[in-house]
Length: 142
Image (tube, rainbow, N blue to C red; front, side):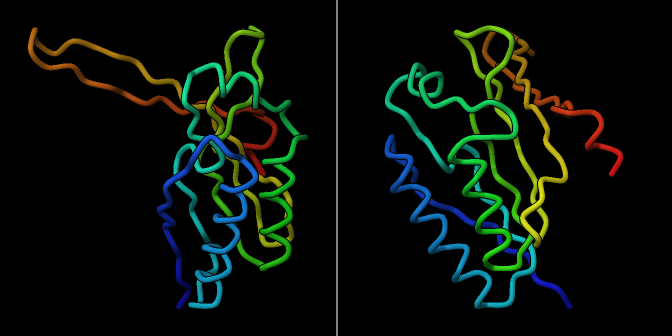
């Protein structure tokens, strides 16, 4: 029977420190038998301001956070679901929240972009709906 691990962590504005903590928790999960590890949303960066995400955004396919995900997946021979990370979009003043999936060889297999819509159910209640869209449609058919 295969095990999965859902990692919970308190991320900070310090990406390097967050990645070190994530690796420590991934190593513990693998030691406990996990074959798939899911990191939380914003695991690499919980900035003090929205601009922090813009400053830390990566181009799809390269950057320290994506390199980290590929590296730990390969190092620990585990599938990694990379919560969400800031990926550059068409507008330089915005980022896309991307959930990236790497196999146990460190290869990126899938990427989804999260769009959140705010809708009013009634004057006192607001509802959020998440819609996931492939970052690269070619990867969705692997």
